[in-house]
Image (cartoon, rainbow, N blue to C red; front, side, top):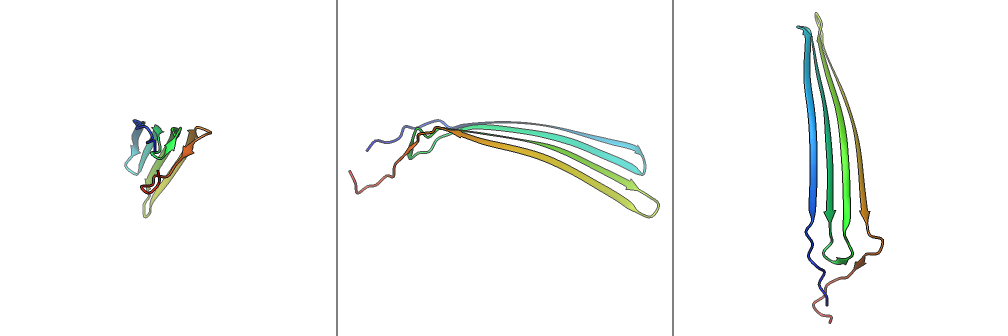
Length: 104
């Protein structure tokens, strides 16, 4: 029985973020942040021929936090928005086999 070849799988990721604070007065404070993440990987299955697949994903995040201190009340507001995408591209014709010690 033929053994599938060994492949080097790899994954690359990158991310970036930014965070800022603003306090216009003693009663009000604002926090703003944004983040970006991107990932790409090349993967193989050990029991398949022609099994290479490329996985990509990314996400973006936006966050806002506003605090207000009034005379008798503290108000805190949060806004968080995130988007994500993912994809998997692979060969159309993959061949899979099962290993067995009792068969030739």
